[in-house]
Amino acid sequence: MVKKKQNPLRIDYHRGIIEGSLLHITNHAGLDEPRLVKIWTVDIQARDSQRYIEFVRRFCQNDEPVSFLHIKRIRKSEERGALTVIICSKHMIEEEDVFLMLMEQAPFEYTAISGEFVVPSKGPSTKDLSLKWSSQYWPLVWRGNPNDQIMNDYVFDLPFIKEILDKISNLANSEEQNGESGPPVVSAFVNPKTRKVVYAADARFRDSPLDHSLMRGIRSVAALEHARKASPDSQEKEETYLCLNFDVYTTHEPCSMCAMALIHSRIKRCIFLQPMKKTGCLESESGDGYCMHNNYALNSKYEVFRWLGSEYPVPHVESEVCC
Ligand SMILES: [Zn+2]
Image (tube, rainbow, N blue to C red; front, side, top):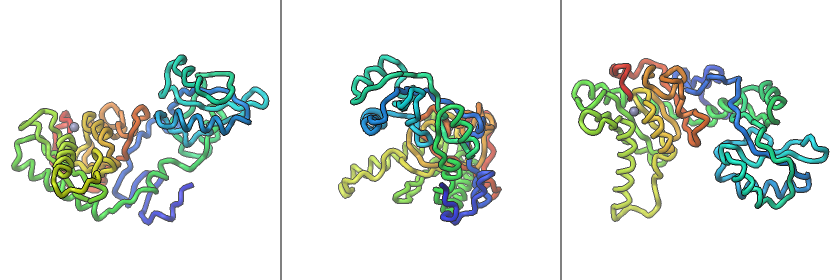
């Protein structure tokens, strides 16, 4: 369960706002209607439970894109004395013959192979919903509202966040005055270990049309890491893997290309200032409402927040422009 008292920040769990200024951006659409994932199940005897657990750990855990943390993997079967167990999702194995090949390695007897059961891909937001879904689909484990936990687990260094937002706001405003290299969009990449900050501005008019500020920032982080490794006095230890666990700040809501690139770069969270209703790809009200960072079909995810205050003005960018 959530230990709310441990987090010293003022968190409005209901509206998803931290310290009155950081709005947690999630895919609210259909919150009470689960997205369902098909699963492969078999029936086993209770005495084989341990062998089943070891089998799943060995053959499925690493390749499974669906989290089953909110789901009981074992339930009573309709067959007396037997258990119905989840082997894997159909996102992991779609074809039955591939599934049967996997099951050839099972060190236990099984019957009743089925690909018909479904489970919610994410835990529900309330206990009532958890009970409802448990009887409707498959038994769930209630661990508290997953969103509350996400917000509660976060450490927000607000003075630092404000400093970076102030900086990208200023840089974007001077880009607008001086720069002709692209729309006045600026991003900042913060290394979680060293706290070094890399800033990047859009340069699509000067270089490639794909040189959005976020794409350039990702490239700069990689180039710096490359140079660091090549330098003779660098320690062997790898400092950065892609942008793993970076915090990324940007003046305007990212487009789909950049939002996807942030997923591939394995960042931890993105904080932005200005929503882009037409071209943005994070808010459920932006673009096609895809909520790239929160999309159930994608393996890796990051958290997104929008600054609600007006302390950090950003230059106007035409609504059709992808940022
Ligand atoms: Zn972009």
